[in-house]
Structure formats: structure tokens, C-alpha cells
Length: 241
Image (cartoon, rainbow, N blue to C red):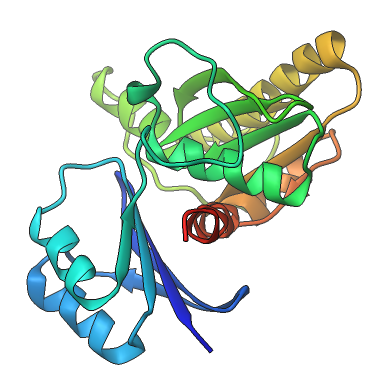
């Protein structure tokens, strides 16, 4: 069976997903974007196809290695997509957002979809029932909120997320945990509500590393899938064969 590897180079970490046909077999955490690392991955899995979504300034050699060992596609605004992007300056749309839109259209075609990606930033991406990506919004993500409160104040500590936090914080740490987590949950619910007022029924898709922790905090019904971006990348790879 042909192997496809989907690479996702985000601001926080580098990852890849290995597909056999349309089945996701394995997630790879990548240490760096060196020639040696990428070549080792291609030697191990022998992909027929590869696709790269990158929102960082990765080393150019990455693309050369992938093109040498496979049929390679770099996701960009010039990529053939299963949806249209009638927005200003399509070249500025992040590759990760395009992948999320592709996943939404693949799973729920010809429906109104709001795909929410929880990463370094939270991205809200709306695709209408004509498979048009209309845009959305971007706000600070989990770690960014913790770091900004620490960095822009004199005494607030830098804390890391712990999911057994109380609603009512009893010390500085638990106040920060409650404020960030519940603040994000209510923001997401509020934006979903604003879209609902305008568009009525639509699907909400949520993805990102903290998806399974966050989903129970939301009052709205959502489709939660931590690997949604990889499924979108695979759909784009197939669409461009």
C-alpha cells in the first residue's frame, strides 16, 4: 500500500503523520528540520507521497530531501484545494488554516463549517455551504496567554497548564489556570454563538493538542479530533495527485 507522510511544522513543534492509503497509522514527533532527521524518516517509512505544511522558516533542505525521496507537495496559496478562498491576499493565509479547511470540507462537504485550531494561536476558520473559505479570526493560544501575563507584569509567575484546576482559584497559580482555561472556553463558546446567530446550523470542528481536555469545558456540541490538521493535509495530498 502506498505511504503518504504529512509534515506539520508549527510554531511550537514539528510533527508528521504516516498514512497507508487513507488510514492514519502513526504520529511522529520530529526533533529538528535537519537533513539527517528528514532523511532518516524517509528511509524508515519509504513514502510514495509527502506534503508539508509549514508556518515557520524551516531549512530549505527539507523540501529538497522530500522531493528527492517522494512525490512532494508544499502546501501554499497556489495549491489546488477542494474549496475556494475568496478572501483578500490569499498568499497570507497560513498553511495550517488551509489544512483545517480541507479537513472540514472532506468530512462535511457542502455544509457550513467552523474549524477551530488550538495551537500557539487559536484560529477560527469558516467555510460556507458552497465550500468557500470566508476567513475567520485569530487570538492568543494557551501558552501565549500564560507567557504574556508573566512577561507583562512584575509579579505574576509563569505557570504551565494543569487540567485539575478549580473554577474558583485559591492562590495565584490556580487563579491563572482558571482564568486562562475558562477564558478560552468562554471565548470559543461566544464566537460559536456569534456565528450561530448569523448562519444558523453549522458544524464545529475542534483540533489541537489540548482538544480532549478542552472539549468538556465547552457548552456547544463539537466534533473534536486532535489529528484534524493531518487529515486535512492527507486530503489535499490526494486532491493534488
